[in-house]
Length: 221
Image 1 (cartoon, rainbow, N blue to C red):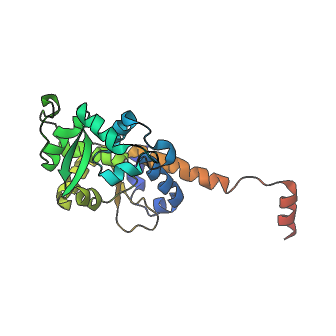
Image 2: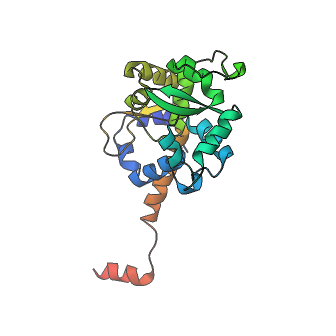
């Protein structure tokens, strides 16, 4: 299990980079990003769930998260007409979000919501950037502050400050996670728990018992 107090003592050690399995990180990220085949959207309702889970996505990113041959444009029109999704401009790109996130993007990123968004979704939100970053952490592996800053065209220091506030509130972890990394990364505790469990499973498979014949060959050698 992950004991947060114990992790505070461990996160500064390089050994954690050696523990986490790169393949496990890659697999987990594909699942969290709904890029694994079994996580892709098969209808408009599932696409809406993906937008709620991941946040802003461009059209190409949406297509990559839907089943092959899916009528993505029709699904998006349907969600837009039902006031369940809307299109906004983030960092110079057109992206889609779940309509209930319109207030967060307006207050956290300074994005202008489109006309027609119900007023209930435009009420001032509390700590909007922190809310967006916490969701970003839930659907990514260990990441640097520069990554969401680049995606949203925000100053890195501004993003790092919000991440630090989340860490102070014990909602995020900060440490050396990715194998081969050089800078400390941010990670959601639930994501790190999954990565640790899967990495340990890989290590356990490497020490499974062998049959008597293999053991005899080893002894002879």
